[in-house]
Image 1: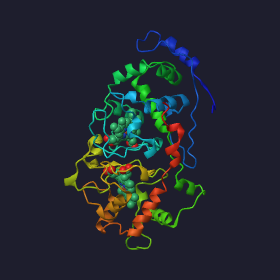
Image 2: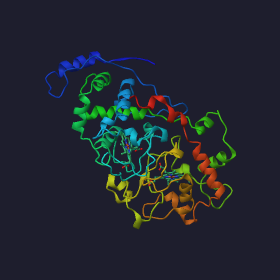
Image 3: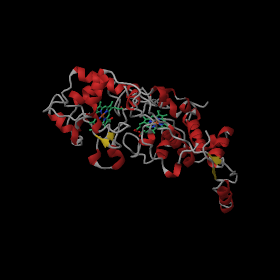
Image 4: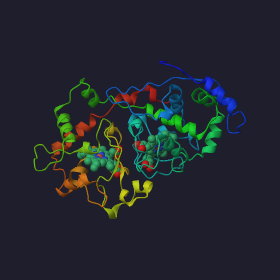
Length: 363
Ligand code: HEC
Ligand code: HEC
């Protein structure tokens, strides 16, 4: 639906005159209209979209093409969507995704929905500051799509369909790394998951089963072994808020110092105090995005809950909230509690996002 047009033609004509002599500037800018893209986040607070990249129909559309286009990889065999598969929560169920050269990456793929709610950097270690910075890295990564940016620019510039879409989105057919990043950022920011059973429960549209309800209580209740009847698993301490994450990097007790083989956040910040800390990921659609953790070490949600229940180990950077349960011999969850927690986690699955035609390949 067309809400309002921003007329930028006049502004662009002015720029054309001002920049007519600059060798970097295209001479084919034309008048173009941008239509604001309306993000429907239902009962979720709308996210903060970067002010210099407000969503528009035209840029979201271009980003969607880029996201699904195999021509973004060296041998035309792989797109972002190869590893971020819509039907499995925009993630990859392979432990380590295989890139165009046949080699596996070093970490489990992350999900690429509700990115607009992620406000503290990207990747498991947060090494990409903005989503637009992140988006251009897999294209050039030799373990992923392995296409040099200059080659991608040459390639896209020769495709008429892209010339047309770049004009619509940016006012000229010039392909640049920045524009590719901005368009991919827009498409990912347009992917919203807000229709799980739990969302419908919050909106009063459905009720939870007895097991799901017990799991919900355990998920949100604090760990308090002195009062076993009300002691919970305190998952919301980190996987909190309506996107079930906290925008922080933490160590959740997977390994002791001697067993750290991925330094995580330290690789991005250089601080030893960040060693083996990883992004706290959203738990939305978690049922469909196995295997779990940055190295995909757990295959099922039962294994994950058992990790928090009995498997956590101490280390120098463990999150302080986990020291009490570790010193208490774990969360003391019964088998029934584990099942109930898993039942609750499965209420976070959003089939409507999985099937949303707006996110599918336009090709
Ligand atoms: C070969 C598989 C593969 C391809 C292709 C791929 N990704 Fe990823 N993606 C991953 C992996 C693995 C990670 C985690 C890497 C890490 O943390 O070091 C990731 C992480 C991400 C994240 C970070 C999410 C977060 O919460 O921080 C985003 C966003 C993303 N990818 C988008 C894209 C886009 C856009 C493309 C295409 C330009 C793309 N990916 C192509 C495998 C892939
Ligand atoms: C102290 C913070 C913290 C608490 C409490 C916590 N988590 Fe986590 N969780 C994390 C971090 C950090 C990661 C990512 C760790 C990694 O991959 O190295 C994670 C990862 C996960 C994953 C894997 C996600 C994925 O995409 O691979 C699941 C599932 C999960 N947690 C569920 C839970 C449940 C259920 C609870 C409660 C029993 C819980 N977490 C409590 C911090 C926490």
